[in-house]
Amino acid sequence: MGVFTRLRDIVTSNINAMLDAAEDPEKLIRLMVQEMEDTLIEVKANCAGAIAGRKKAERAEAAARAAIAEWHDRAGLAIDRGREDLAREALREKQKYEQKADLFAEEVAACGELVDQYKQDIAAVEEKIQAARDKHRLLVQRHTRARNHKAAQTTLRKADSLEAIARFDRLENRIERMEAEADLVDPSSNASLVEKFEALRGDDAIDQELAALKAQRTGG
Image 1 (cartoon, one colour):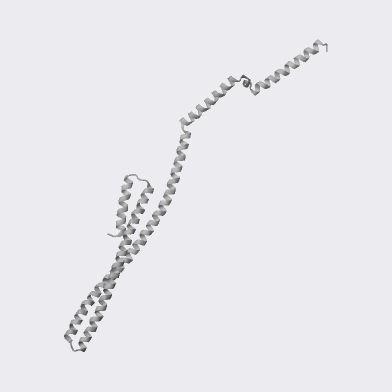
Image 2 (image 1 turned 45 degrees about the vertical axis):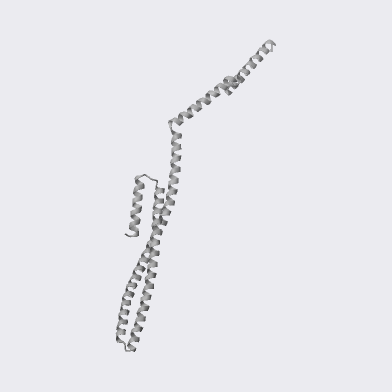
């Protein structure tokens, strides 16, 4: 199973579980990031293992190549000494190490391809993790704005409700009653501004009538 197949299965499983549980989107993305980070750790560990295997195969191949050269020299020495039988045995050993060297070379190549694939997977997972983190940050901001807007709208709806208006009306009526009670306690405060002006007009009429009466009594 490929790393992304496994990652997709894990993330999909958790997403479905959280959607069924009606979890919040921030928590959902955090879980996705955590799953990808765990997968990244595993992929890096596998990559390190493949690198170690490649180095081991390289050492084995180098040892086999050295043995090939050594048995080649031994076969030449046997020929020089007239020991064709020993030369034949030496060449057989050389052939065995050539086969081993070829197998180790194939293993080196296979490990190299595996390491390259792991490195590509690591880069891809890291890119997806960064993208998920960016999305999480934006989602948190959007969620915060939406939550604040919802709270503001809820407050406005409460203020505009009939119950709130009724409370304001009751408060206004209470204040009016208090003002009326204060006027009853202090009668001097009952005179309104209009009444004061009417009183001034009444004083003018009395003064005019008094002056007329004085003129009549004095003959003037």
